[in-house]
Length: 267
Image (cartoon, rainbow, N blue to C red):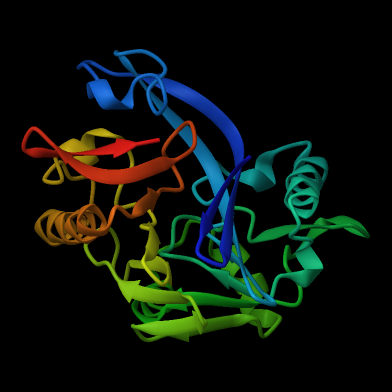
């Protein structure tokens, strides 16, 4: 678990299944060992961000891209353990009022097995509105995202699913902003209080390499995603802001700055 303070706003990251992947090139020196445990490895972690803004409680990308959680024999226990860790950090599942999905990448742990019937899946955050970019929901309804479809259907049937146009303010210091390119309607979450700024960029940044070289693409629209990465990095570097990415290893990000003509992160 990692914590940050952005003015009056608290951000917590709960990691699940942290691991390293081999790399055929050297990780940026600034990333070792914080985000890359070795020069030839990069850290990956499925994670969820929780944000406390006054009396509002928001969860962002709850362990998205976790491989087929419904196939796990221990799915009920695993989901309960993640939610218990979130509760221990001050964010019990029943107190979450908003869940933000930056894009569609499977359903992650937006849903969980029912405590009463492990074969029936229910919303992991039962009192929350689940916000998705409008374009992502339209693409799902058109059949573009069959993987994880059952999870979204659970949320839709419960009346919890809501498409949003951008920009969209979630709370006094939390806003959803356009960050296109990775998926059809990808967004980022900006947390801003006074001079302090943090951005949760969804899956625009999958590895430290995309910080050093924003043109490195693993996206639906590479040129558009590159422009989104550059814009976010420029904004954060100008303000000494935090980039907090759901899939980066270690703490998941750091303060953006310019280093020898490239962008880098400081823990």
